[in-house]
Image (tube, rainbow, N blue to C red; front, side, top):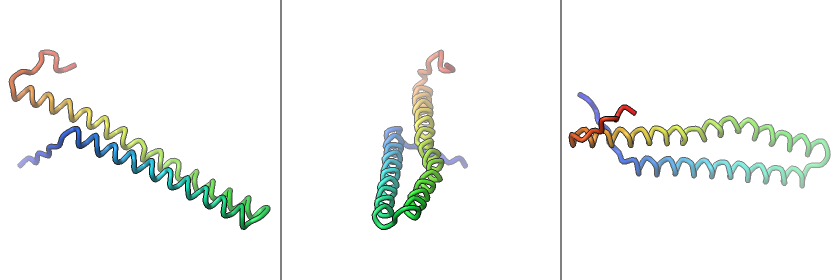
Length: 106
């Protein structure tokens, strides 16, 4: 028995937008945390201790960059999937109506 799952492309686009906004929020929150930590260390630590701790913050941020980069690729992939889904739905609608274009393989 085949399982058929249907949605609308509008819903898919909304979800991609929500994911993108969430990623932007995460990135901003991480930037805020880094800024607060840097300020904290600069206020309470001096000299080598301050330099060391600020470097640790920067290094931790650098470790997160590949993760954020990977996460930002997901909405792009989802948009491509959504576009393909929309094209298939149009094809299915045309096929049901018996009005497929002659050049549908393009």
